[in-house]
Image (cartoon, rainbow, N blue to C red; front, top):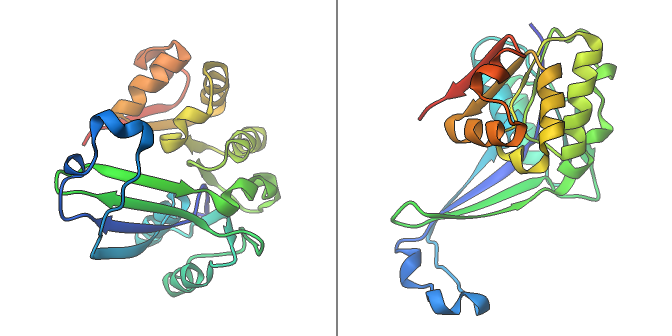
Length: 221
C-alpha cells in the first residue's frame, strides 16, 4: 500500500534545564521578561508529523510517501530517509528557507518552553495530492493552514480514503472549516484534549462527529 503522508518535516532540538523554571521567573516582572537558561544536555532528532508517521509506517512494512516542504538544511534528514528507504519524490526543497525547527527546553518539573520556526513548511501547499499517481490512502497531519485545507479537498475529490489528524494545527481553523473538513474525511483522529477542543469548535459532540466519518478515534495517554 502507498500511503501519502501530508504534513511537516522538522528538526527537533531538545534541551534539558537542570533546575526549575519557576525559580528564575519573577511573576511580578513577566511584562519585562528576559531570561536565559543553561542547558548542558541537548539532542537533535528528526521530527515533524509527516516524518514521524512515515518512519513508523515503514517499520510496519508500508511504502509511505511523505509530502512536505523543506529547506536548504535538509541534508541530514535526507540521508536519514534514504537509509530507511523512504521515498523523497514528493518532498519539495526550498533553497531560500530553513527546514521547520522545533526547540524544546524542559525543566526538572517537566515544564516545557517551546519555540517553533515553520520555515519552508509555509510553502507546503505548492505540492498537490492530485498530482501523485497510485495513492491508495492518505493522512492529512499538521502542516500549514493552506496546505491542510488543500489536501483535504484533493483527497475528497479523488475519492481516496484518508485520516484527518489536526493535532497541533487545531488553532488554525474555525468551526465552519472544521465541520467542512470532517465532512470530507474518512477518519478523524485526535487525543483526549484535542477532542474537547474539536467538539467546542464545531458545536458537535463526539457522537455527532463519529456519525459523519467511518471512525472517530480518540487516543488517551
